[in-house]
Length: 80
Image (cartoon, rainbow, N blue to C red; front, side, top):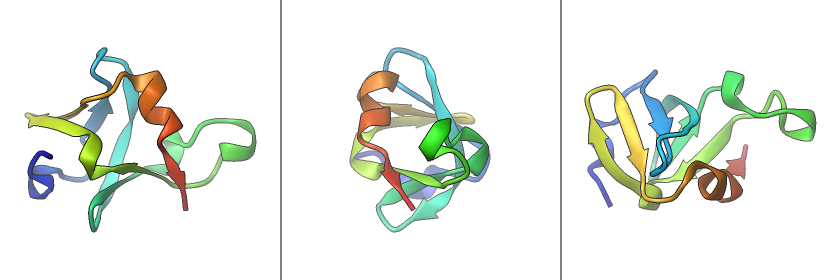
């Protein structure tokens, strides 16, 4: 797992495939809380979602890169 302390507010979260997953709201323990604007649609709209810190492969510049492709990472998201 990458160093989660390097993750800052408003960083872009992308999958291993380079596809946008979300934008960091903040780190909450061992999870990344995404902003509501990246919360999805339908029943997911308007909720914060979390990505497990265990999926973080790298933090570089203003980007958090996950070890899973975006479509897989979204499946692991947890609703708040």
